[in-house]
Length: 196
View 1 (cartoon, one colour):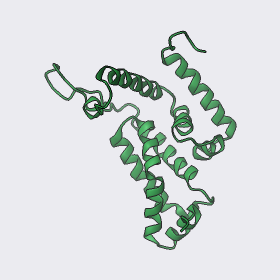
View 2: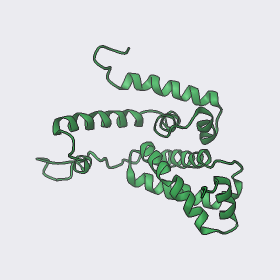
View 3: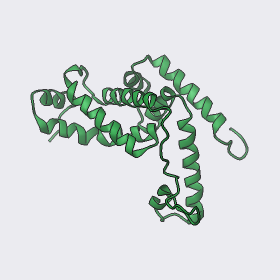
View 4: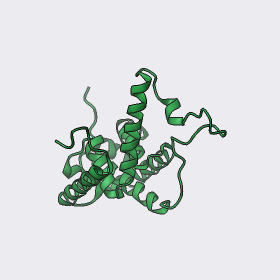
């Protein structure tokens, strides 16, 4: 049995089929939540934005005109994240690296306590440091550059899909990606031996 197309699911949802929307949510929920988590660097904020994104998708399904809903979903998620980011720009967030204890001695962080211990501890610490450095560097990028980079590298959208998701031209997407990578080169340490 073939899977119904995105267009068919949206049309069924508009007609009142609740299972159609549930299918779209199962199909695209995980990548959208992953994208929002990378954009916000905060799981709680990402979950709030995820709910807001799919609330908007539900309410505005009649405005969807394409065949494939993924770029449209990411467009809504991007706008939702950027709008929230602008509103909360000056509000501090609790980091996953904030100590879980109050005495400051022998403290673990939430992130380290959730890490799998299948990797040698020294190597795990090195990997955690590298991931944290990349996450911190991503958060220093302007939101549109960060969005373009996350959509491209983590979600494997092509330039035209990113342009649709970000509501801009392909040329603008290329500019955002170029500037994001250029900025990351200044923020991230050079590998041993320099750039090749």
